[in-house]
Length: 246
Image 1 (cartoon, rainbow, N blue to C red):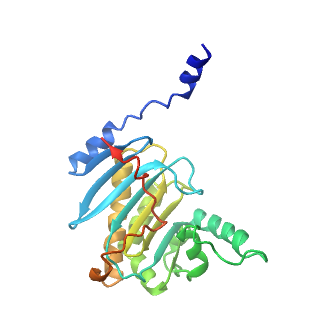
Image 2 (cartoon, rainbow, N blue to C red; image 1 turned 30 degrees about the horizontal axis):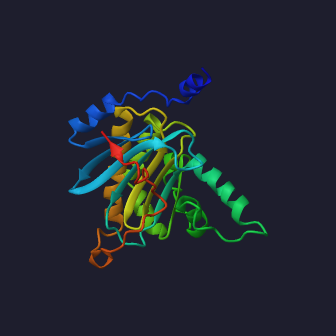
């Protein structure tokens, strides 16, 4: 009897119904896979012939509670195109945390396990968003080259960020948008995915990708870097031993 109760309470929660997400993805010609052993999914697609990936699953960042939505795309941008946009509440919180952890008299170095979005707040200058009056109170930005970072944000991306803040990015909801080692990333909290939110996040991401290519002067030839297989800590996918499944 005791064993029966143990089995009852140790059962995993019932699988989430992701039928609408799968239908949305396949209708757009994207690949859809459910993550084995995780409450999540993976969607693969193409933009201008280059692959991108959407993942939704348990959060990989301490500053995001519950589940998160992650988008990634290989762009072959110049390696020094390091730009970061954060939702303002998240930026303020990470700045406080970074100051507390790494600027006291005991610990003066930032460890390699610290996410880039925290390290960059110390390493890189802020992008001046003073002229973007409706945006500067909702988002902050840093960049290894502030002029390039401002060029990235100005225009279409600023418009899409403002639209996101008005339509689907709730007050206090963390958002990370960055370019790192030639790739583009988006990360945000999302407890319950639906096609409308996925489409909105993807539209923001695609605009960020297009503007990053424009601001950085376009893609570069990485033929000499073909053997590089290291994974940035900005992205930790589902473990290789439990690959996504249908």
